[in-house]
Length: 132
Image (cartoon, rainbow, N blue to C red):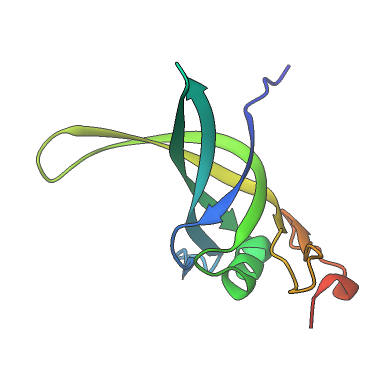
């Protein structure tokens, strides 16, 4: 029986997406998403920001690269994966990454209506969803 290792995040892109291709020619797009959390502790308002690295593969990666930009508001769903490596300073590094299986653009069209372009891990998008 498989376990469950799933993440759902809503936030804004911290930079433009970057797309590259594996040696086998498979596209992968990476981007960072900032999620804010506001709380009040002892009457003092606090805002914390968590950053998540997201990787989108295949057609979904191509769609993310085409439609997302720095500041875009998105919903991303996917599985969690950890990676470890040794930095140039010799220190062991650990990174938690979201491997996207679903992405929805939540930006406004300008009339206050959300633009919701949904793509699944296979890149399936209904053409009627594209806002132009």
